[in-house]
Image 1 (cartoon, rainbow, N blue to C red):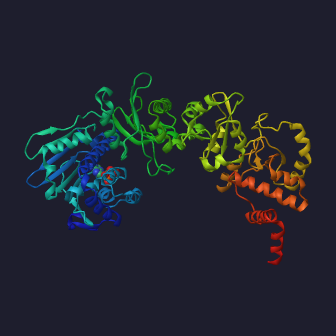
Image 2 (image 1 turned 90 degrees about the vertical axis):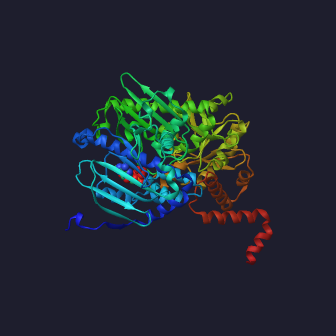
Image 3 (image 1 turned 120 degrees about the vertical axis):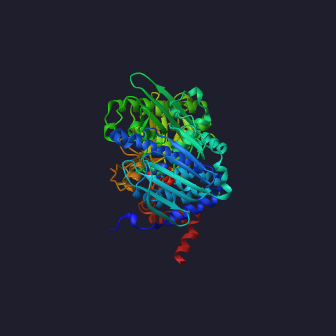
Length: 630
Ligand code: ADP
């Protein structure tokens, strides 16, 4: 094997995707070209954070150069701007992996999300971890000279952004990375002190290490404030500071809905800065995606995605915690089961719930927006977090028969509206709100003016298994055996009706044996002839369906068929002969399954029976003769 130094600069091809991305950077992001500086300074600051972290275990890495900084170095004559850091640096392999390929799965998603809106696209860059390439918006050649902390050899990477890059060994005095931009002729504004100072203050003021400027042989000037944003007093910070920091931290193109910044001293000392985003990340439902707050210990960055710091149902929260009580060498393993971490998690959870509460009270429009995006995630808390269940329930919103203009309702408002005589909170579950509204079981409740919650998120089936009551009121399904509207809707002469219908109910029970447990008269139906009711111990029929779809065995208890004594179809049953009776009964069963969004076991039989019924009732004689002729 020959040594690297003996080789001429090696040319390497970019991946196809990288090439497409570069093209796109250069052409479509031009109107927002200044963001390149934000991205490069942000990378330099990350490199410093990584080095600080590694130096906790291995102080030798600092090698007498512990003052970490980012320098912007201008060479006016050469027309270059160099972003220099003395952070962790990159080895040869790092350069190939990080700057030559975009191996991350995010790249494809990035390309797909690109729109014609250059401003939005520019924001997407950071979110998808492709910030480095923004250098090519203003530079026709980019030279990266880097030496990894602890390595003796440096390497230089260079590209014009047109399909390939070169890589060779290089000389470099200290560790870290120099990114030199050979500015295009019409981008010379980025050599000017005023322009660079303005951009650093605009995008990078909150960075916790100095960003300095040196032009040619001039003096070095520090451009930013140097204190990490969260360590500064609230009174000094503007909304713009907070949203700017959010962009840096979350790489989210949208401004956050709200945030909470808190310094806590006492038993447990920490600073937290928590944001509620206004948009879902593209991978919100990707279960493998690492999430969680950033963790700092005594201002030193420890890790991204401290998953132990907040419960999973608050995974949409972005932000950081800076703790004074954890050891600097804390690892993920140590986080698990650490008592201080447990306490921190409980305190942060409470802080987020307070924040949501504030939003619901004071900026209800924002809260509606929040709930529309993250409500289904928050609801998981009703299942997972017994301690905070009541608080979370207060924060949840549901579709309801009382919704005005589709607005979701809070349980507290439901309870406040409950009329005299109603003692429980009623709900029905279906695949979507419209289907839930149309479920026959709701009819009697609606007629009586009792509100019904229309639950249609998949998770709702589990929610109602855990949230048994709210504010002292039991939650009950309209489709459960116990849900009872009597005496209001019951026929005036109930007993008489029951005796009168007893033979019919028994006959239905026999005809549908195996499918239903029994038949009985309903007090919850108004327009529909029949509905299926789960016995008190049965799984909800929708949950049964969801479990079946997931390939899990669902213990099936046959439901009760409730019939509407006033309905003409039921009257017709009474006089039907045996063959017609069985068809009609089977039909009532099938349509009850359909009306609540269920699936028929034998759809073809249903269609056959329905056609027969239509023909026999529409014009019996003519229909019959036609069938004979056919
Ligand atoms: P992101 O920073 O979002 O991951 P970038 O395209 O900006 O995406 O950078 C890709 C990777 O290159 C970074 O994750 C990092 O590992 C490496 N990198 C970029 N700039 C530097 C730097 N100044 N020092 C060390 N590593 C860097």
